[in-house]
Length: 334
Image (tube, rainbow, N blue to C red):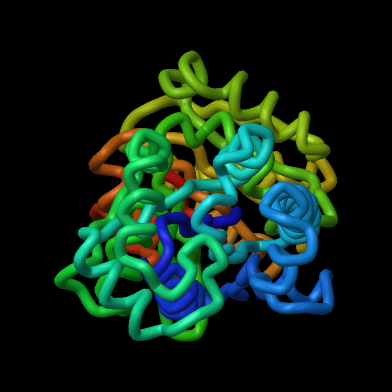
């Protein structure tokens, strides 16, 4: 998963990117610095020698190479130049690989920041406020076309980073020393193959555990997305309801994993509500001393339940949740 920070000159993409990358424990990639390293010269010199057309061509190629290099990694934050996505193919490329968060500010705020930074912006010679306003007017419709936006005028960089993270819908939580990623997506189930391939590049065998009601809605698209990404998928469909969260069903899940040849290098994916998440997480935590699992909650209640403490459990005849285990999923999708 990649997050792209975009916006006009002086809005603070690189500074905010450092804070956001630190929050997610991801690398920050400053695309302008990568262009300078590739060209062997500062961007103003590159503009002077090759003009804006030559710069934009190098920018587009550098961005494509960086996206391809980081697309197969767990994640990275890319800070883009203020006109990088005016190039339509570049915009299509980045939007296919992650959310674009536009940082925006008033012309007055941007003018103050550009003046304070002094130089390095070939489209704003002499930090001319008039040139800045003309550039903003020319790009107004372009910038307004991005749905995810954060207004930065009254926020410090850490606050902007948090708001950008909310817009991107990507979070990390730790239970003891065990980290989990939380991904919030519209239509996220269809992207699960790509997301898990980036986190499990060896493409382990997957046991997809769900119940009959959820399976009718989502099992096929999720299984198809996983198979397209190169995973071998074994589907286990269980009866719905609290009674499924039992020792007998737990044994059934263990038997299924053994019969399908899954081992400690495999992956278990829970697809459904709280019962499926509780049971599947408990099964994964107790199978062969614990194997990785991913939770894909399909209801709001399950999302809230799954986000608290990494609790998984089964019920015994003496009462509900009388045998519990805390094991955080590798990835939690919503």
